[in-house]
Image (cartoon, rainbow, N blue to C red; front, side, top):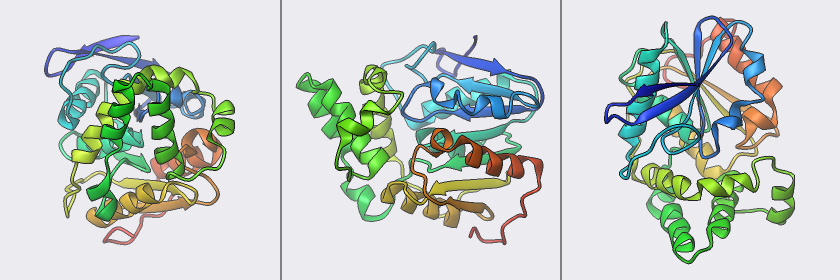
Length: 268
């Protein structure tokens, strides 16, 4: 494990696996262990870098948190590694990847269902406050269940407890409840600009079973980019990178290696 100082002095830890050009993986609401099924697909020919988000894993923390502070953390890691990285983020990590790529040198950008809220959903979103109300009532586990129901399943699942019993991060993820509530607050405050000035080639990934609000969000990101490749994966949901690692990494590797044809100008 290595560490680097972010702009405010907070120590940010990051893992390093393999050797080759850098590939930085940014996790979302779960822990850095989210990427465990992905690492073997790339470690033979890339240096896979996995930052631990502020307040998670081996990283330090601070009282205040904003999206731009998360971007500063990612930039500190990028500055600490050799070479210009490919940046691959999932969910909140996807939003961090997009915002980082607006100002940092990035070889290529990949985002799987970035946590971008648009339209009516954005105006009505109150996931952070509803999580916090449950936390204040001493119901941290219920707060996390509420989050998972909304983000992983779009608010619609018949047997959440049965699903959780088969979901590897459960119940350890309950330890991240407060951290996840605050990143949801940052997500709800974020407003996607009409145009994203990102020069790096960009791949946007979504699954047909992902939550509708995130599928709307990624299409809005696609529209805001001057040029991007958009891939929809049949039959998988928001957990695509770990739910179907072979399919997701096949798309990612083709994009990184340049064997995937570029999309026409204008996003779609």
